[in-house]
Image (cartoon, rainbow, N blue to C red; front, side, top):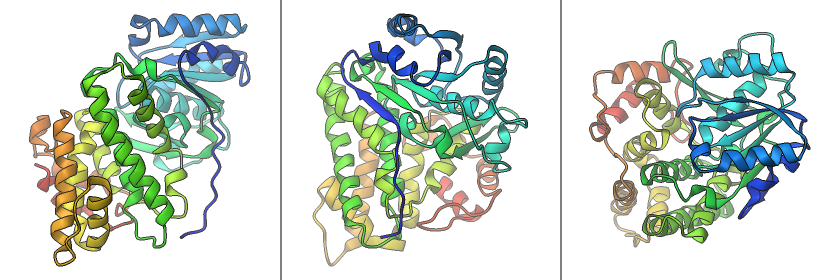
Length: 387
């Protein structure tokens, strides 16, 4: 096990009706707030009215910035930065899923910075401070509600890049599973793939003697798989929705990677897919991850066999560990297909004529991954396997 420091300061307010506490929670981080959200679904569901009422009851002034789309855009982030500066905003309230939260974090990081906020995402600078961010979560998926990460897409060049720094971790997150009842099945499925990918990025590690976090990863994956079936059968199954919402947070709040070094190549490869083709992040991960697994499996067949056994219930064949490992990968692939996700580029309508470009862009800063280092050739091979 590696040395580690674990600290997560996000205050989680979980349960039915908790969005009505938005104002009292937001008041702790600022009296003048930017209310940041997507394309209007929170108004159709009535969530907007409840949040606004709570803010007003707590005496909080706010201005609004809507329009966040999946794979959030740099141009809207820059618009938000200017709004915050103009109106003396003290905190940002993100009401939505991972895209809204990531956009809010980027705005928060950019307000006090004199340069271009994109510098942070290119690794040219590191934010020393940020406006505090609060969250009302509507889509369990990215885990951004209590993580140190933000992913933004720059329209020019179709570049999708990440920033990871503790200064953008949200101060509070309100999680009411009832808010997820109206999610379309495909969006629910994309969220499930996203949270599972966050766990698997950590699970496939070269670090030894990490039994506790192995077991935590496996338990969280099994919980997601079990409750996915319940949610698709009954979208208003509160208990199943609650399990998924909490699992999405645990998957990416830092706990599951304590003492171990994760991989993250699959996420970076997927960023090129969604950066160019604007595919939902979870759908892209459902395509990339099984192909990555098949490509790197020989590096540690025993770990893949353990994954097959402990997560998917496959019996380990001590005389053919590779067969067991492949059963686990096939089980993951079949699961993604069963919940309506593409598992091949062709199934998502993505052609193979820009694979070289994606491999080139993914490795601009060097090889990807920690479990197995991947250069341009290896990434190209993985994408070709996923055709």
